Amino acid sequence: MEYWIWLSNALGPGSPRVNDVVAHYETARHFYEEKKTEFRSVSFLSAAERKRLCEAKLSDALRIREKTLAKGYHILTPERKEYPDRLRNIYAMPAVLYVDGDLGDIDENVAIAVVGTRKCTDYGLYAAADFGKGLAKGGAVVITGLAKGIDGAAHEAALRAGGTCIAVLGCGLDVAYPSEHAAMQKETARKGAVVTEYPLGTRPEGFHFPIRNRIMSALSLGVVVVEGDRRSGALITANCALEQGKDVYAVPGSIYSRASQGPLHLLRTGAIPVTRPREILEEYRYRYGAKIRWEPSEPETAAPVKPTAAKEQPVPQAEEVIIREKRPLPADADETMVKIYGILSEIPIHVDEIAAQTQKNPAEVLTALSELEIMGFVSANAGRRFSIS
Image 1 (cartoon, rainbow, N blue to C red):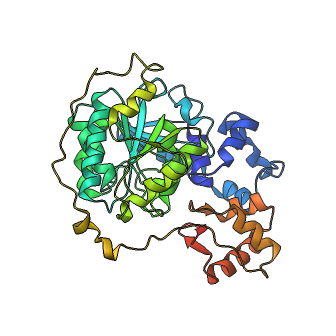
Image 2 (image 1 turned 135 degrees about the vertical axis):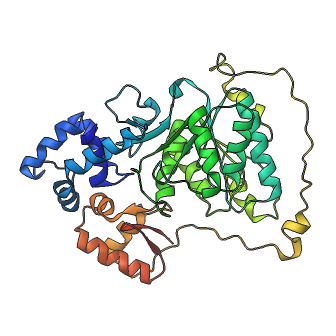
Image 3 (image 1 turned 60 degrees about the vertical axis):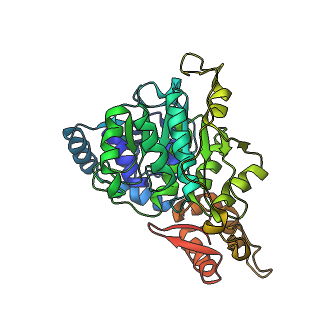
């Protein structure tokens, strides 16, 4: 167990090198033996990764293990049978999962992630609560990031309906973020599980959340996006789901609301439109018949909030939607800049991973990234991670 923690500490959550370690060495302990030769024979590592692996101390991993277990939390690693199979074959599989509660037989359950923006409308809050409640009552496990807005509304409604929930955090288990969801986080651990890749004491950082989104989608059979603009993290989760071969659902909203632009974009690109929870459950009714509590009919419910488009988004002054897409580089951009820009996306990626994928010297990569940032094509995030602007 401590060897996987050491690996995660050295490479950081979200590193695709974990897949390489599993493929070539099976266990982190076997891989640790390469430290004797400073990992010189490991071809899939960059120079910077070798340096971090050599500098990382197993004693630090042992302290994290003991501290975590002493607080009553669980630690899941790929060599343990409790580690979810749904995570084993994804890109950048987690080396470590810190768990408060019990994931149970998540691989055998209908699990649906409900995601959306923090800056949601009353319509979005109602829809999220309706889907959270309906999915939970139908027997599905509801997965969210426990964030404000859509996530929180769906999560709270699922718990109130007596459902099982999983919260995937971008911080340590001992950190309540947001603080107003502290009680909900504790209740989730009692009725399901709270999971994270980050060790105790880790504070929430902006770049943690896009990284954790791949876990939310991987544990799920499908992801439903309620509200979010084109730059919303909810769309990152939806993209992760598509890459993992999962279903993506979108709740239609007002064409005049910026909060609906994300779902509307997904619908234009092939997402499944849904207006009621049973439409999602219908997709898995026969494959997971023993897990779904199917009701023959579902009465129509009236929304407690009447959405008024004129109040939320005045039609004459509808906000211009910011579309975060790649812009073409200038014609005089050199080959290194073009190659680096080609692999970047909205999900922040570590400079070492960029160097590995482009097979460029890290110093050369940083120089090109700095130029791209000055030109406005790239954004630098915490932890030497970069994404498109």
